[in-house]
Length: 336
View 1 (cartoon, rainbow, N blue to C red):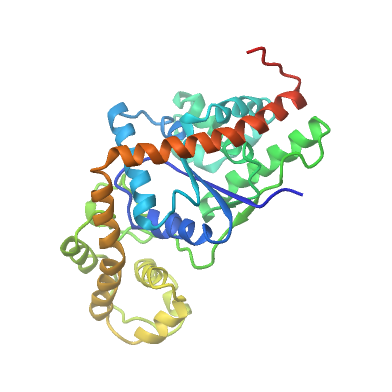
View 2: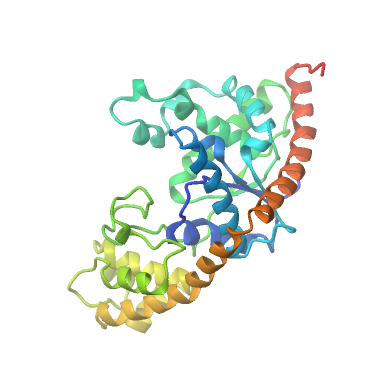
């Protein structure tokens, strides 16, 4: 029986937005009161795309600042960056030898990111799901909070764990990780196109609410967000094929911790200009204090480095114990 432990990783992209908060970080804050949690800034995953080294270091600190500003307690959780714990990479190599090429070729995110010219994609991009499995299993994590777009990678982690346990005749050594999919967590879409996920990479800054946006800019972005001419429906069926409308209503529900049905009951029959005003107020009330705190924390880099150092030592202690066991199971020997 494995100890219940939650693991999740966030790429240090910098300038995190409302989609990152509602889709992941807000849930992390809730989970810290229920489980032992390990939150990793996955900088090794980030370099599957070429990074500016200075920006990468800066983005790691900003991600830590965002975690703390959003309510994560560094004394209650382990918060660290992936590159500080070498066991992630060591276990990833072992999993490279366990996972099958066919499994990786079926990963839809590789196909999307590699595009038509996948022969020129990096090997790192192909095998990074194995590193993701190592991130989770080096701590024998039992649960991972995931969005719909990450379920396939978690299935791969489960497959790797099962095959390792079977190949090395060590039944139940690695737990078969369970997803934590919160019904309240929404997949936040672009404010300009309800079919696209909210993303930092989209050209228009008006496609997203950045966590460091001030109240005037948030208000402008919500006012200019795309909707349609119809009024707000009273039932969920009325949102069918209305992607932009559904997105704004889902954001309002998530930011206020209520169900979509409650939003439709309150605003059904009203026009979007009225609704947008209320949505803007809700986002400003929740996000602006976080943005102010992020900016404040970024001025105290020593504090942020201290969090990473302490968290990395705690994570490394757990990882080294497990890696020693894994080496014994596989038959590898360290003489140093």
